[in-house]
Image (cartoon, rainbow, N blue to C red; front, side, top):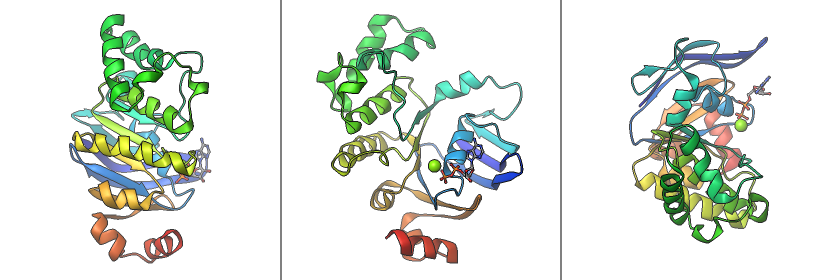
Length: 240
Ligand code: ADP
Ligand code: MG
């Protein structure tokens, strides 16, 4: 589903990603972990071209998204993204948040888009909130709307950048539960997270980034019980 080949990203003189190589199969759930500033968000943002790689190539399905001829908007249609701070449209109702892109980008009729939007709201447990505006929702509810909105584009891949980091502790569970449901549908997911328990439970693989390098790429059973690198050992000692 995704292939990343020698991915570099620099901001001016700052080398943030220093040659990442990995691939992710269809239906795989990959958790990306590592210290703050290690390049996790940059890596994720390169996967849907929110950041333009400096060097290297990324394929999603059969298309080389780093090819100049690739239509970035087309790529983003197939790659859903959920951010730490929700990024909902504040002046649109919950349902309108879910129908906007499918109507505008995919050409769904209002009726089709609303039908789909309501089904998705039901899935994330917010069927009764369709007429609310985002500022009336809790953080956990906002994030569930954001997930539903991304799913409304029927993406091939879902990217999550610390989806629970901005939430009060009591709301983390409801968002992780929605993500777990999504795992069970077979969605391909790349999740940057500090929720080690969640990563261990749902991920097929852990990618550990440190200083812009992919230091470990291993199943959770291996990574958490016997990390190979000193850097991963030190990191786990701090967070577990
Ligand atoms: P993480 O998500 O692992 O905390 P990031 O990918 O956000 O790490 O950032 C990695 C490094 O790149 C940091 O040093 C950060 O300051 C820098 N960085 C991120 N985005 C930009 C940007 N748009 N311009 C300049 N530097 C950036
Ligand atoms: Mg980050």
